[in-house]
Length: 67
Image (cartoon, rainbow, N blue to C red; front, side, top):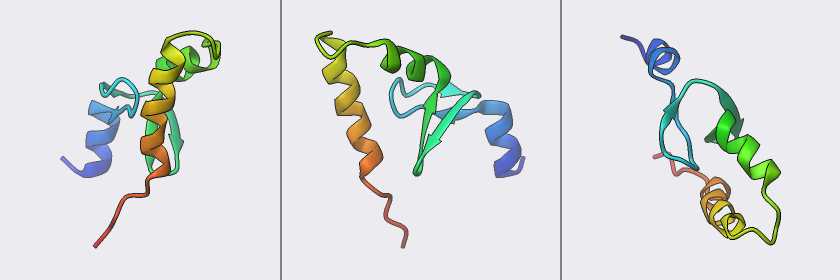
């Protein structure tokens, strides 16, 4: 199976929930599934989960090193 077909069939790993999902957005080189995107948007800054999302999103700002 080619890499493109595998992504369509299996999905991509979400940077937040770390599960393979098919629907979501790409932010730089990272993938965020639709469910996590919705939860992040609805989370208030006073919510304890806010820090969790901020910590997970720090992975997005670190570019992958390609050699």
